[in-house]
View (tube, rainbow, N blue to C red):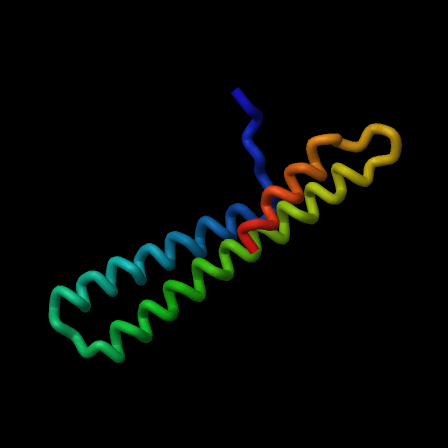
Length: 91
C-alpha cells in the first residue's frame, strides 16, 4: 500500500469541496423546483469556480512539493519529475 500524500492545503481544499457539494445539491433542488435558469446558471457558475479553485490549489501545492523533492541535492526523488509531468495534464 502506498503512503498517503498530505499537503498543508488539503484541509482547505476539503472545506472548499464540501461547500461546492452543498451548492451543487442546491442546484439540483433548484432545478427540481423549476427555478429560473439564470439563478441556476449563477449557482452552477459558483460551483464550477469553487471546484476549479480547489483543483488549482491542489495542483500548485503538489507541484511545489514535487519540485522540492526533485531539487534535493544528491538524494532527490527520481519519481518526482515524472509525477510533476503527470499532474500538469490536469492544468
